[in-house]
Structure formats: structure tokens, C-alpha cells
Image (cartoon, rainbow, N blue to C red):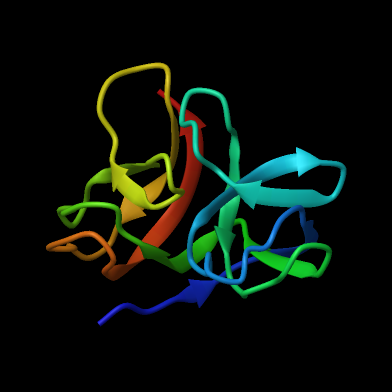
Amino acid sequence: MAYEILGQSVPMTAAADLSSKQFYVVHGSAADSVNVATDNTAHIPLGILQNKPQSGQAAAVCINGVSKAVAGDAVSAGALLTFDSEGRVVTASGTGIYTVGIALQAASAAGEIIPVLIRVFKI
């Protein structure tokens, strides 16, 4: 069962309709606005979206702590995570990519929600 221990959450504005993107990775798309992170070599992740805002509405982004996240594939507990082209967390591999955190539980398939310890950096 996924759990969360939210640290800081920052208020931003949704740059697009994110109503179906709760627990997806987001990046800054303009001043004080966010969109789904889809390019792990170019989009610096801010954190994980906590709510379901439509375009122009307030978007709550967890920037540290433990957040729920939607998996894009099977993930092992303890795996370093990046994000796929849909903003879902996946196992990080290679170099020159941004990470978003560490899987605290495993996911056996895409679409599962798992707890992630948020840690953003580039490998």
C-alpha cells in the first residue's frame, strides 16, 4: 500500500489541464507554473503533483519528503527513479538524466502508485 509523508509542498499554477496527472512528476514551465515532466534529459523536475488542477488553477507540488507517485513500469524497492515521457516514475539508467527520487516500495506494473522519497539531481 502506498503511503506519503509530505515535506514541503509549494503552490504553483497549472500550465495545462493536469486533472488526470495527480502523483505525476512535474517541472517548471514558466514563472510559477508547472506542467508534466516528459523529457528526463531536459526537464528539471520540481517534484510530484499532489492535486488535480485544471489549466490556470492552483497546483500543489511536493518538493521533498515521501510522496505517492504513479509508476510507468515495474520498479524495484530501493531503485533510483527518473520519469518517462508521460511523467510517470521509472527506474533510472544511464547518464545525463534527471532523477526524482528513490522507490520505497516495488511496483509490479505501470499504473501502480508507490511511495517515493523525493531526491532531485542529475546523473
